[in-house]
Amino acid sequence: MFCSYKFFPVLFYVVVAVACGPGVKENDLAFQLLVQDTLSIDFEGEIHAGDFRKNQGIIYNYRSGEYLKFDSTGRELTRNSLPAEGENGLFYVNSIKIVDSGEVLAQSIKGEIGLLDRELRLKEKMFMPFPNGAMDLKRNVSTLEKWNNNLLLFYPGRGNKSPYTLGYYRDNYLLEKLDLNTGKSSPFLKLSPESQYQKDLHFEPPTALISALGDQLYFAFNKEPLIHRYNLRNGGEWEASIPLDPDQFIQIKGQKIPLGNDGTVLAEGEITGLYALKNGFAVTYFEGLENIPNQQLTKAPSQRLKIYSNKTGWASPVALPAELLFMLNFEGPDRPFYAIVNPIYTGQLKNQIKILKLHLQ
Image 1 (tube, rainbow, N blue to C red):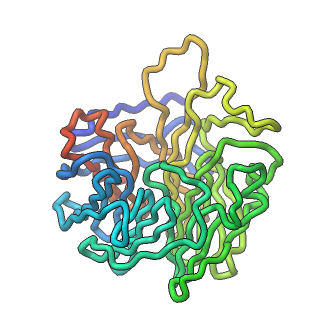
Image 2: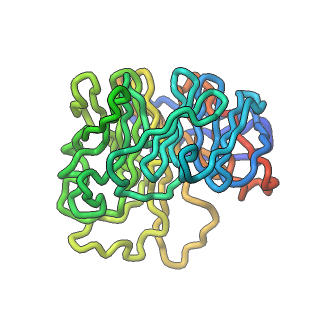
């Protein structure tokens, strides 16, 4: 079967990307990606974290400490800046979550958990009881969820153990569960028996992604094409692990001796987004690139969106435009969603960002 797609510049109002090729699996369900609108928002500098929920979005810049809230039309609702240090500040925030009340949770790499009110003022700040063992400056990580009156966090390092040691995720819990009533944190969630990190091998250090809806929690490591489902009502019991089953996902293989990349991998495959849905979940990911001698590189690693239904399995992968920096949300194939455009591709001014309003059909 032959299949192709064309992607017009992101400033056009309508873009179509057709999912096709060998990614068609059990149910042959395919989607088209449409760009409904391009939002232009005045905002200075890089975006390090963001979220979108209930027709409102938030973006954050670490260097300025600025938070900005906007609506689905791109209209600014409010903005505020917080210092990086001090009682009323938050350090490098790389995980942001809008909660039901409209307030915002912000997790910093220093173990601070900030609660921002609707006007983006710091309302409350909590601290994890031990240092973060993974001081990863990766932007916009999915490491924070709220469940009932608990916060679930990917925050390794309990007992001063390093997550970079062999077998760490096999021998320790994956998450911390922070009780908002008592402020106490307890270890939570064990590694799936099907994960590659059960092996007595060295892998490239991963970052986790978590997403919950109701009593279902989904967990994935960014460098492993496998998604794990847990039942929060049953104490975080592991239920299943679902292979991403990508057309391509380039990995640095596990090693007895941690030698790292042997030169065969130019860019690793990586899961970049995990989104719990009513009857399944969705994943965004880069396929990665092999380092093939004398190859001519004409494009970045392909980005894909895949949707999994508990009843029918995987739909065909949807090709995402290379211009996307990261997605802010995904609430299902029948709902619009939003993604940040990488300024490298647009030549846009330093004090303005562009956000695509996307839809599947």
